[in-house]
Length: 250
Image (cartoon, rainbow, N blue to C red; front, side):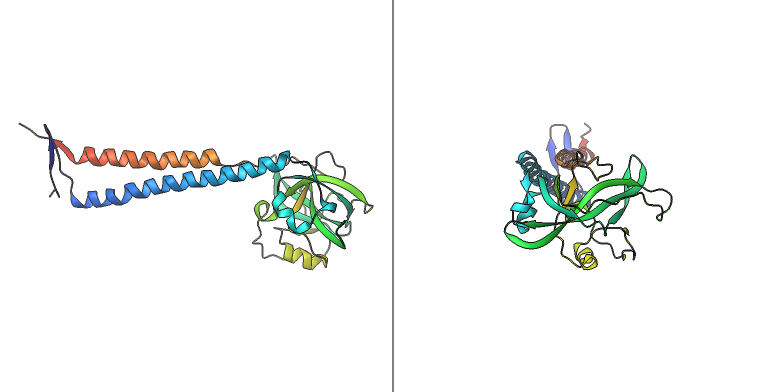
């Protein structure tokens, strides 16, 4: 039984209660999902803007700044003077390059800042090495522990690397790890790590394969999703009208 009747010339719109209720719930829900995706697109635009601004800034000298403020410099080019801790290396597992399995090589880099004489340390991602069939068969990753200056890009550990690993590093170095937790690694190293990493520049020596992936925002993806949700709302509305509208026979 129809809940009401609306007649327009030779057509009568007479929806039933249940389809009307479902449609009344679904259409606003689909519209809200579309609006949520548009809001996500706006958020990604804001991130894109910050990344672009960081990438065009003059490279920052990490020896001359407060390390507590570096979280605001993600994706900015940087230089730093200090030395690698050649006794301690970490191999981040399950990194692929052109379909091949391998590791990212992380080595702590110890340095001083101009405003604080206490040594600090930062993890440097020196690039990708191949997995050679056995975890005991690791390529030579040793590096000089002389004072050097290196260049790279500041990256955010929280967004670059999964932090929910519960495994324990192996006993001897280089240690194979499944993810990076600063708390765990600082305890393992017996010195604190500042909460960013450096991706070593391609022009630097003492590195491996470094085809670093640029930041790709997903603005277009969110807009596409929003269009899909809005389109579904429109289609549902049209179907609702069509199914519940009948031509009156004379």
